[in-house]
Image 1 (cartoon, rainbow, N blue to C red):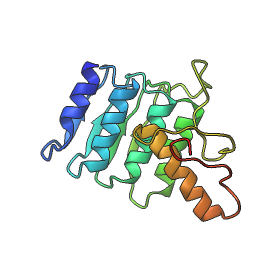
Image 2 (spheres, rainbow, N blue to C red):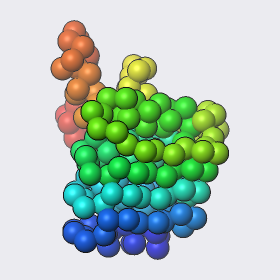
Image 3 (cartoon, rainbow, N blue to C red):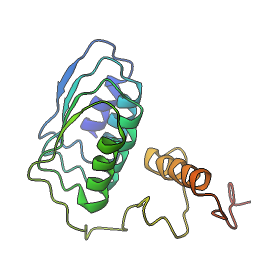
Length: 166
Protein backbone atom coordinates (compact mmCIF):
# COMPACT_ATOMS: atom_id res chain seq x y z
CA UNK A 1 0.00 0.00 0.00
CA UNK A 2 2.87 2.38 0.78
CA UNK A 3 4.50 1.64 -2.58
CA UNK A 4 1.25 2.48 -4.37
CA UNK A 5 1.03 5.76 -2.45
CA UNK A 6 4.58 6.65 -3.49
CA UNK A 7 3.82 5.77 -7.12
CA UNK A 8 0.64 7.88 -7.07
CA UNK A 9 2.59 10.79 -5.56
CA UNK A 10 4.84 10.80 -8.65
CA UNK A 11 1.92 11.73 -10.92
CA UNK A 12 2.35 15.23 -12.25
CA UNK A 13 6.05 15.41 -11.32
CA UNK A 14 7.90 17.42 -13.94
CA UNK A 15 11.36 17.47 -12.37
CA UNK A 16 12.67 13.96 -11.67
CA UNK A 17 14.93 12.50 -14.34
CA UNK A 18 16.16 9.41 -12.45
CA UNK A 19 14.25 7.25 -9.95
CA UNK A 20 15.63 4.24 -8.07
CA UNK A 21 12.82 2.20 -6.49
CA UNK A 22 14.74 -1.09 -6.25
CA UNK A 23 13.78 -3.54 -3.48
CA UNK A 24 10.61 -1.63 -2.48
CA UNK A 25 7.55 -3.85 -3.21
CA UNK A 26 6.45 -1.99 -6.33
CA UNK A 27 5.51 -5.28 -8.00
CA UNK A 28 2.06 -5.48 -6.43
CA UNK A 29 -0.74 -4.52 -8.81
CA UNK A 30 -1.82 -1.16 -7.32
CA UNK A 31 1.78 0.07 -7.13
CA UNK A 32 2.95 -1.12 -10.57
CA UNK A 33 -0.28 0.12 -12.20
CA UNK A 34 0.23 3.58 -10.63
CA UNK A 35 3.86 3.55 -11.74
CA UNK A 36 2.81 2.61 -15.30
CA UNK A 37 0.32 5.49 -15.30
CA UNK A 38 3.11 7.84 -14.19
CA UNK A 39 5.25 6.60 -17.10
CA UNK A 40 2.51 7.38 -19.62
CA UNK A 41 2.43 10.99 -18.40
CA UNK A 42 6.11 11.65 -17.64
CA UNK A 43 8.17 13.53 -20.18
CA UNK A 44 11.28 14.20 -18.07
CA UNK A 45 12.13 10.77 -16.61
CA UNK A 46 15.19 9.23 -18.29
CA UNK A 47 16.01 6.32 -15.98
CA UNK A 48 13.88 4.04 -13.78
CA UNK A 49 15.14 1.21 -11.57
CA UNK A 50 12.43 -1.17 -10.35
CA UNK A 51 14.70 -4.15 -9.89
CA UNK A 52 13.86 -6.84 -7.32
CA UNK A 53 10.30 -5.59 -6.77
CA UNK A 54 8.42 -8.83 -7.53
CA UNK A 55 7.03 -7.36 -10.76
CA UNK A 56 5.08 -10.25 -12.27
CA UNK A 57 3.66 -10.77 -15.75
CA UNK A 58 0.70 -8.42 -15.41
CA UNK A 59 2.96 -5.63 -14.18
CA UNK A 60 5.56 -6.29 -16.88
CA UNK A 61 2.89 -6.18 -19.58
CA UNK A 62 1.56 -2.88 -18.17
CA UNK A 63 5.09 -1.43 -18.07
CA UNK A 64 5.67 -2.43 -21.70
CA UNK A 65 2.36 -0.81 -22.66
CA UNK A 66 3.25 2.37 -20.74
CA UNK A 67 6.64 2.54 -22.45
CA UNK A 68 4.91 2.64 -25.84
CA UNK A 69 3.54 6.03 -24.78
CA UNK A 70 6.80 7.34 -23.28
CA UNK A 71 9.66 8.09 -25.66
CA UNK A 72 11.83 9.84 -23.06
CA UNK A 73 12.69 6.92 -20.77
CA UNK A 74 16.00 5.53 -22.02
CA UNK A 75 16.90 3.12 -19.21
CA UNK A 76 14.67 0.66 -17.35
CA UNK A 77 16.11 -1.80 -14.83
CA UNK A 78 13.80 -4.80 -14.31
CA UNK A 79 16.51 -7.11 -12.86
CA UNK A 80 15.42 -9.91 -10.54
CA UNK A 81 11.68 -9.73 -11.21
CA UNK A 82 9.47 -12.75 -12.02
CA UNK A 83 8.29 -11.23 -15.33
CA UNK A 84 7.27 -14.61 -16.77
CA UNK A 85 7.23 -15.54 -20.46
CA UNK A 86 4.41 -13.20 -21.50
CA UNK A 87 5.81 -10.22 -19.60
CA UNK A 88 9.28 -10.82 -21.00
CA UNK A 89 7.90 -11.10 -24.54
CA UNK A 90 5.89 -7.88 -24.09
CA UNK A 91 8.99 -5.96 -23.00
CA UNK A 92 11.13 -7.41 -25.79
CA UNK A 93 8.44 -6.74 -28.39
CA UNK A 94 8.19 -3.14 -27.21
CA UNK A 95 11.97 -2.74 -27.61
CA UNK A 96 11.88 -4.30 -31.09
CA UNK A 97 9.02 -2.09 -32.28
CA UNK A 98 10.50 1.18 -31.00
CA UNK A 99 12.52 3.32 -33.37
CA UNK A 100 14.70 4.77 -30.61
CA UNK A 101 17.17 2.69 -28.65
CA UNK A 102 16.37 1.86 -25.02
CA UNK A 103 18.35 0.03 -22.40
CA UNK A 104 16.14 -2.46 -20.58
CA UNK A 105 17.96 -4.74 -18.18
CA UNK A 106 16.32 -8.03 -17.20
CA UNK A 107 19.24 -9.83 -15.52
CA UNK A 108 18.20 -12.61 -13.12
CA UNK A 109 14.53 -12.35 -14.16
CA UNK A 110 12.34 -15.44 -13.97
CA UNK A 111 10.78 -16.15 -17.38
CA UNK A 112 8.98 -19.35 -16.36
CA UNK A 113 5.22 -19.82 -16.33
CA UNK A 114 3.63 -18.45 -13.16
CA UNK A 115 1.80 -20.86 -10.89
CA UNK A 116 -0.08 -18.28 -8.88
CA UNK A 117 -3.23 -17.42 -10.79
CA UNK A 118 -4.64 -17.12 -14.28
CA UNK A 119 -2.32 -16.97 -17.24
CA UNK A 120 -1.92 -13.33 -18.29
CA UNK A 121 -3.18 -11.97 -21.59
CA UNK A 122 -0.95 -12.83 -24.54
CA UNK A 123 -1.42 -10.74 -27.67
CA UNK A 124 -0.06 -13.69 -29.71
CA UNK A 125 -2.77 -16.01 -28.32
CA UNK A 126 -5.75 -13.72 -27.61
CA UNK A 127 -8.56 -16.26 -28.04
CA UNK A 128 -10.95 -16.53 -25.15
CA UNK A 129 -13.57 -14.69 -23.18
CA UNK A 130 -12.72 -11.54 -21.27
CA UNK A 131 -14.48 -9.70 -18.50
CA UNK A 132 -12.69 -6.36 -18.34
CA UNK A 133 -12.99 -3.46 -15.93
CA UNK A 134 -11.73 -0.44 -17.89
CA UNK A 135 -10.89 1.40 -14.67
CA UNK A 136 -8.11 -1.18 -14.08
CA UNK A 137 -4.97 -0.33 -16.12
CA UNK A 138 -4.21 -3.98 -16.97
CA UNK A 139 -7.77 -4.60 -18.20
CA UNK A 140 -7.72 -1.34 -20.17
CA UNK A 141 -4.46 -2.44 -21.83
CA UNK A 142 -6.08 -5.76 -22.82
CA UNK A 143 -9.08 -3.95 -24.31
CA UNK A 144 -6.76 -1.64 -26.27
CA UNK A 145 -4.70 -4.58 -27.51
CA UNK A 146 -7.84 -6.45 -28.61
CA UNK A 147 -9.07 -3.35 -30.40
CA UNK A 148 -5.71 -2.96 -32.17
CA UNK A 149 -5.82 -6.64 -33.17
CA UNK A 150 -9.32 -6.26 -34.57
CA UNK A 151 -8.22 -3.23 -36.57
CA UNK A 152 -4.97 -4.68 -37.93
CA UNK A 153 -6.05 -8.32 -38.40
CA UNK A 154 -9.53 -7.71 -39.75
CA UNK A 155 -12.07 -10.49 -39.70
CA UNK A 156 -14.64 -11.31 -37.07
CA UNK A 157 -12.89 -10.72 -33.78
CA UNK A 158 -15.76 -9.64 -31.55
CA UNK A 159 -18.69 -11.89 -30.82
CA UNK A 160 -21.30 -11.45 -28.12
CA UNK A 161 -19.66 -8.34 -26.72
CA UNK A 162 -21.45 -6.55 -23.88
CA UNK A 163 -20.90 -3.27 -22.11
CA UNK A 164 -21.99 -3.17 -18.48
CA UNK A 165 -23.71 -6.53 -18.88
CA UNK A 166 -25.97 -5.36 -21.71
